[in-house]
Length: 103
Image: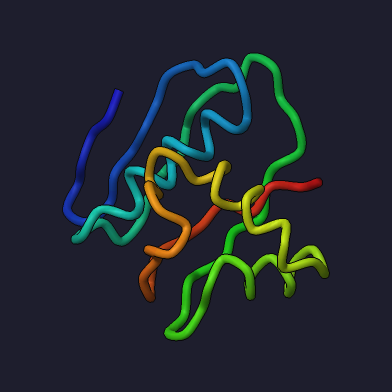
């Protein structure tokens, strides 16, 4: 369920994986006008939570990958973790929040 209260969105319900919960939270939170997401999703099969990265001007997935994983070639991991929000690894924008999964 998705409910709005001003610029805050509350999401509730059950999902199978932590990844699903994180992707839903990101999809809702990256909408213009949404300032906060109150994630009350219940995860049936919990795993460690991913980290998040706010895109800054000049960032690329390769640069973020090098910063986080020490290897710019692992940018595909970040790209896959943010589908379907991202459709092209070269199209990210400042202010966007990306999911950075653990390897």
